[in-house]
Length: 130
Image 1 (cartoon, rainbow, N blue to C red):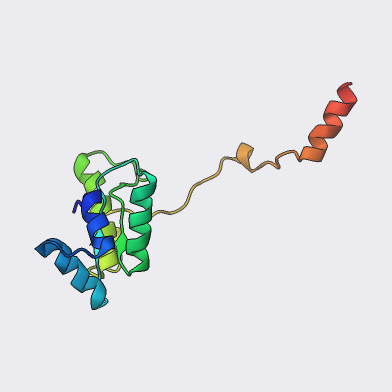
Image 2: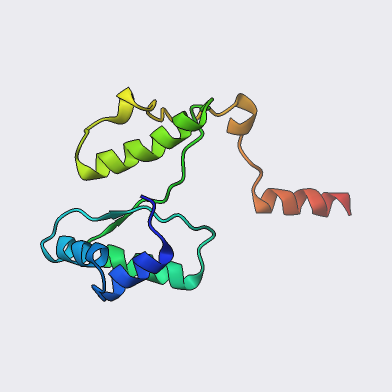
């Protein structure tokens, strides 16, 4: 953590040109967990292709994107959300509730729960105005 797009490309391509890439190659070969956390954004098509190839080969791509739904107050709390995702993928922890608050869903205000007018209804309203 973090992993450059160049490293992800070399892992996906199976080049094994250094010890890090070789270790990742062995993880994939032996079906061991391989988690990469890309550091660059935004992604271009080559990045997406390499991450897709790596995922198809058995790797896990966990973007370093913290969540904001529990309104973190410090940088450490933001980092904790990414660390919790990584640890859960590794199986090092079953529940991240002791590090970050679990997502409880969203509450929808009453006004937003009202039925949205259909296209037919809007067409009728427009026709009446003419």
